[in-house]
Amino acid sequence: MKKRIITAAVAIPVILLIFFAASSFSYILDIVLAVGIVLCVGEALNAAKALNLYILSIPSIIIAGAIPFLINTKFLLPAIYVYLLAAFAAIIFNSKKISFNNAVFAFCFTMIISLTISSVIALYNSDRRLCVFYVVVGLAAPWLTDAGAYFVGVTLGKHKLCPNISPKKTVEGAIGGVVCGTLLMIITGIVFNNLVFPSSNIDKSVNFVNLIIISFLCSIFSILGDLVFSMLKRNFDVKDYGSFFPGHGGFLDRLDSVIFAIPLLIITSEYLPLLS
Image (cartoon, rainbow, N blue to C red; front, side, top):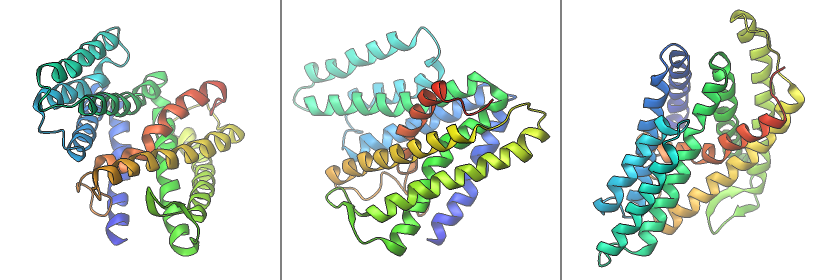
């Protein structure tokens, strides 16, 4: 518990600092995301025991690092197409070492991880001055949900949510996580409305009705993302994807809930604007 709190206390200010710096130096965000995505993909491939299948893992790592730089360009689809060809050529020319399942897993999860995390750049490019607000919503909603689910689950949890996938998760914890995530996002909106926006001369205000709806949905989808990647860990018989963050595991252990939440935030905020 102590390690989890210390890691979160250090990581959150670092993440916010990166996005503040990105408002002045545009490629900082692309570089940081590329590094994070490469590490997440590497952890997923390692869990699937496919990282040492170099003819498959090297193209996966390359495309994972390239997508943040290509996400808003005309070169994205050609790059994905070339990667698709490379993944399945690996099966054809190395059928004794590489199975169809290896190639499908590498392609699908490289794309899922790379495209969803890179979608943060869409938030960044929409309005760089407001990027920190959107990123805080996109990252904080899942992480606060996770924290709330943990504490409520430990205190009140009795009914297992998905015992075959994640034995420690409970229905009470999930409900508590969604409630905590949504309530804490309301507090976050109040802070931005009354402190951050006025001090930054930003003439915007938070639409709290839309914030509540989107935070609620992001919290639910963050739990779904967590369960999906927990299912993979169980399938590959690994406890954590890595050990970079003490008490939290690897990069993918920290970002699994964000992977489903960030795209949802982008989609829903088009129809339910968070700021007016």
